Image: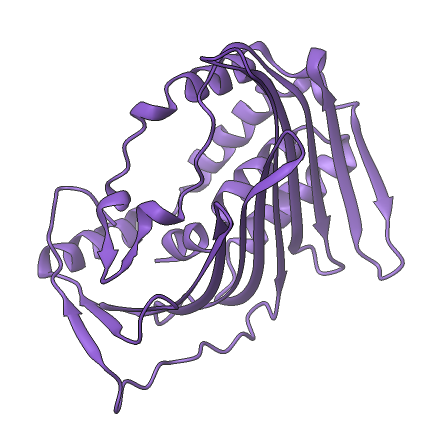
Amino acid sequence: MKKKVLAAAGISGLLMVGGVLSASASTSGYELFKTAVKKTHTINSFTAHTSASLSDNGKEIYLVDSLNKANLKDESGNSNVSVTNGGKTTKVDYFSKANQTVVKSSKDVNYYVKEESEHKKEFKHKEHKDENLSPKMQKDVEAIFDALTKNYQDKITAKDLANGNTELQLDLSKNQIPTVGQAVVSFFLKNIDQQKNHMEKAEFGSLQFADLKPQLPQLTNNINVSRVVLKGVVDKNEYLVGQEATIYVSGEDVNGTHHDLVLKLANKFDQLNNSKVTNVDLTGKKVIKVQDKHTGHED
């Protein structure tokens, strides 16, 4: 549940970015960030404000803003999400507990309730048991990060903030971005029309998850990641309380039109181990039960 809640809040991806940043720091910054990532993964509850935006040639085409609360001990959480896609804004309230999900969108008045199947309950239980790395595996992962990012250890900057927190930043230009990173981004954008996600098929009445995904231009030529800026904030208690990533990509689509894409991701943690999840009261509400169809994938 811990891994899934973090992912739902948009945090896991940023923690992956943070992992790269941590392994790219100077010795003191590296150890500080690595400690913060480990410590943050041990929290029992949190509130997270997460946002993401995508612009194309200076025009914002996608925006997500969400406030997320989670209690990892009892596997409960709630999120208030606003998505602006193609000029249209959809708001979604999401509530979850151990075996139930409730979704309410601004598209209609109904509350959609999804109970998990026994198969999925067993799957989640096994996933929860298997998700924690052993001490040996943690050391192996750290060694891999060290090896992959050793060329960037001198490019980190650290700044002490007035509130006692520490801000770390890594700013990479085009020539400093690894060739493999350029290749992965290029492959993804060239084949974006073939990217399949079973979540796209999920729907709750008039709300369809496919409508909430950004429509990226399919770039085919001269694709380059021109700049990547990563930031992390570690508080006085060595928790990771802020993360930002800004990625600049350029290229041409099938018609030869040039695109400058800028993706911004940000996350702020607070109320660590002290966040209160809001439960939804369905009394008097229009409730529609959604059948949980197991398709061989975990939602």
